[in-house]
Amino acid sequence: MRDIVFKEARIINRGNILEGDLWVRKDRIERIDPSIQLKGKITEIGVNGRHLMPGVIDDQVHFREPGLEHKATIFSESRAGIAGGVTSFMEMPNTRPPALTQELLADKYRIASTNAWGNYSFFMGASNDNLAEILKTDPLTVCGVKIFMGSSTGNMLVDDMTVLEKIFSLCPTLIATHCEDEETVHANLEEAKSRYGNNIPPSAHAWIRSREACYKSSSLAIDLAKRYNTRLHILHITTKEEINLFEAGKIENKRITSEACVHHMYYSEQDYLDLGNQIKCNPAIKTSEDRTAILKGVLDDRIDIIASDHAPHTWEEKSEPYLHAPSGLPLIQHSLLMMLSHWHDGEISLERLVEKMCHAPAICFRIADRGYLDEGKYADIVMLDTKKQTLVSKENILYKCGWSTLEGKSLPGRIEGTWVNGNLVFENGVVVGEPAGKRLTFKF
Image 1 (cartoon, rainbow, N blue to C red):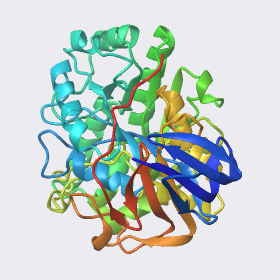
Image 2: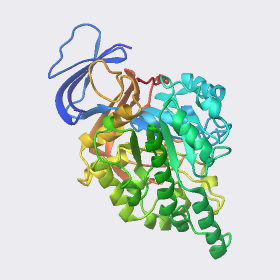
Image 3: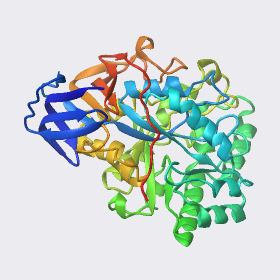
Image 4: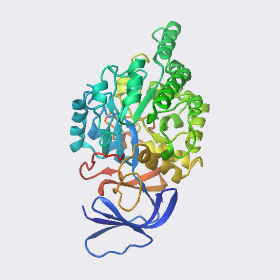
């Protein structure tokens, strides 16, 4: 690594856009000034009025390794991430085997240590019978504990109220929850089977995994968190009713926070007609009214973070009939550009977008030295040209599954370069160099 000076940049940081130069020394940001002149072996990059922003921190991804490498790997999906401006990720425990012991969690960190293009952390998984393992989780080196309060892969549904109370009262880290009430979903699925037999249309997904199921489960999680003063983060909010469960305010003052995902702000139930199982995900994409309410919740600070919930499956798997097609879609390479669609339409500013995708995850998870373009922070940097567009095509999709719901669409903005810990890893549409990710650490 050598010194880099970015010249004539528009720097998006802490609610402002500043014009000036940014100096990276080794893996950190050394200085930001209106003009920086250095001598010696310096690499100068002419930003020429384009934007620099902190790398996106995605707090919810599924990279499928170990056990499901035919869908994705830590190497392939983190590579897609840096092409999309995502320089740090937090990955979920529902792999095979699921990360339900400290030993299995350590295995994922071992894989990432040589294969992750972005900085990484992995959630510890929860089940009805692994409380002792949960309590061993180190809050300084692990992002949190994930609880599926709804259907999940393998032995990861936590539906024992006694266990839930113990986890919420004793957990040493932040708890992140997937909230859907299992009994409600199961009853709705049985009704759908009685109506359609085995030919359930994908459009039924929104009412099978209904708003009532989401609200009931989210309400329970919040009640438990308030009872035990737990640090709770509820993932992928999908309904206007759930948004009313959260308080507006600064994220640093909250014990209970929430997340919106890009596809729930981009698609609505009408899109099932064209995309079918491609947009089948849990919790489900719902109405256009919910879509509008989620974005409003982001803007009024009841929803704190924007993430992807990147969850790839093979095209063959998604082409199965509804009952057999898995839930989830690939998103990490395009999540920032999808949010730029809202910026392009005048619905959100670049400053707020950076706040919700970069600053807020760093605050919520108390990530050390990332999420900002500040002097002394790690140099996780994205160079963005907002005057260009990106056409999504088979030729430039980097997901191992090789497909996207966005194929053929032009999204506003083009990611011209990505730097992870001061290393250039993506430039003009091409991944360069070697994996440069480091393990995320946390401050308490």
